[in-house]
Image (cartoon, rainbow, N blue to C red):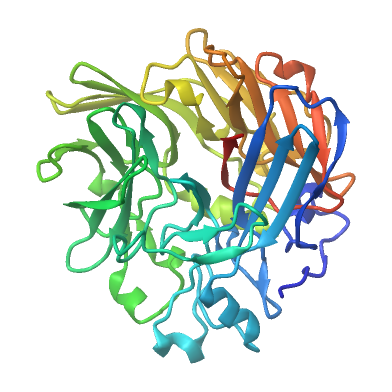
Length: 475
């Protein structure tokens, strides 16, 4: 079992830095202390995943993306609120934990010299969750899905979805409600870099749809889906394949920003993947999309935009207390004319933000509200995200939740009220690290009244490392 990393932060380090340490205690579902009142209609389970180890056999990881995955679960039921927290256990994770030294490289941490010839990769299962056909999976874009027990968050197995997934499977599947199907992709490097496309129908079996060739050996973290299209914004990143084959440096160290190559908007017709539309654009980067919808032959896409790839260094340096530069992610709206082959993008807010989401009821439809994590001030932009926000598309207003001092939330998840139809008729749920208490809780906010602060805080008796992504499964 991996144990907690010894805290070595100095007295001058930012308070949020203590949150970036290995999970101190693993446990199944147990009662949480509730401060305030959990809404009567909030019933179901929150699941979240993130990198929950920050060193391996005494060697610190070099990037936030590197650690072994851990999963958080919180059940809201008639008998109270219960929480669980466990490190996941893929075969490669277990092999490394049982060894005496580091065996694998990671996104930002090189492979040890004495293990380079093994050419092995670790499935870290540390990025997101997927609930599909009654099963729960932890996802890591460089490898296969990992099935996790809903009962106690124990690891069940790595899964190729009955022989469909041969290589990688992105951490960001997207469901198209009109088709009752979720879609995903996996990147394959070789003479040509390709995106393998997958369809996961509700109640059916996963299938491979085909593949599309990418403009170079780029990295793709997310995509977005509409009724008719799978949409990729491909940044001008290029991976040095030769150095990676020789295990020279980490994956992150071998990525190069090539702005002269420009970005490419790749629009793949779901019913005709062999004939994608390719639209050139000026160089930019993104991690995450919020939503997209169709207006005739035009696609409207909301996403968090970066001018370049320095966001990668910023995220890695959080493990060392930050590098003194502000985060640069801003909410943008892009308009893609598929027929004319044009792309334009416009900044919609000057507030630093990330992890955009919309209400489940408007996925793939025109939306009026975007929920985000972000920063409360220019100074705060130099460190961990400290705000939960709601963006009003019509007015451009960004409303910030009142979480209190030294509170550091992960991505907020919107849960609609039963019977409600408005995009803000429900609750926002966010995992929060309280730096003063050095402990974590899950905050429940009324989405219509963020300024009032949480209506309930469900307290763990220990700290939880930050998580990247999660979802809510209604009871």
